[in-house]
Length: 332
Image (cartoon, rainbow, N blue to C red; front, top):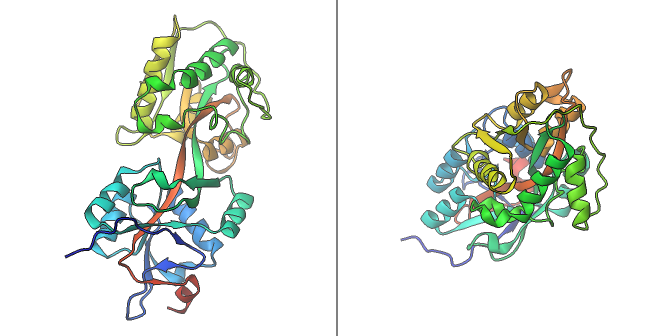
């Protein structure tokens, strides 16, 4: 009979890694699907600890499937990027009773911040019932981007104002991050819409971001918001944001559409097919700078409206798995 732990301890990754069995086999680590942002971040974290591909068995699973493997004992550690809290992690705890969440060291977080656009983030112990202390990790941020050729100064102001002043009308769990405390997260390397900047400064925030230049905008009343897939967070949350705008901005109508999320939304803004789009701040920066997926075709007409919620790197295992030091991984 399994023993249910009342509180599962957090583990520090400088001293622990899950998974080497009694026979000395390599740890089984789920790093995310091939060519995914999750896998890129997973390998960045492992690399910061000096763990190379040959030091572990990599499983290219989606996070939900990877957690099934953790539950079955086939995967030792699973890494994912998602909103907080994640229902799939809560489900794993409900079924296993011994989930642990791994914390990144200060040195690793400092290294990642220096060499990427990911930022330090604290998962507070009240985020999950099984945590007994805060967990240090990294996060990207889901942000709202606006088309500077269709969103004029006043509309940019209203979009930011309603999104934050009326956030209590949004029931989605991630809406708890629609606060002024978090409003500018992820925007430090982006250009801000002048209307949004005016709103934040009226609220007493210091805005040091460069201000986007608006195009020659003609009056319009119908706006398209690109979200994400129905199975993710963007689509339902974006739908609620659009409804809140519709209920609080007179004379304007916002329609949320299902998309493949960040990159498609940014391309659609660039091509004039979309007025607003939800995106992780990392590809948004790449879009503005013409890097990575946007090399040779930058998005010059997108501006930051505000942060929506953090996309948090969450690394989980079970306390019933064998634990050894990171240094021992290379010896297996």
